[in-house]
Amino acid sequence: MGDTFNEFYIECECGNEVLRVGRDEDDNTVYIGLYHAEFYKRQFRFWETAWERMKHAFYVLMGWDYPLFDIVIDGEQYDEFKDFVNSP
Image 1: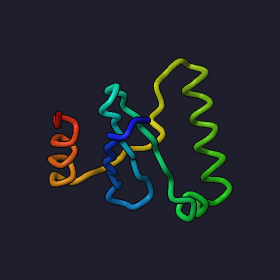
Image 2: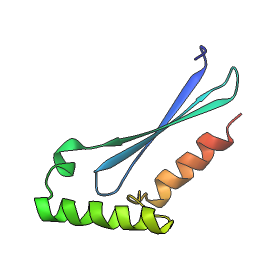
Image 3: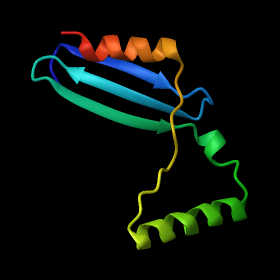
């Protein structure tokens, strides 16, 4: 990464996930990282986790898309993100 590396963080409204988007201005490379809040991730009961894993396996076996989760952001964060992406 070069000297001109910019980062932008998008936090989900629920507080469970954070999306980190970074851009290296030297070579115009974009880096995207997703972080989970481990405390909330570990609060599921065994059967809830097992059900989600079985459902995921079924979708994979059928060749269907399976969304792991959604990130919900408000309008202000969306506008800030657009400005970040469109900045020179």
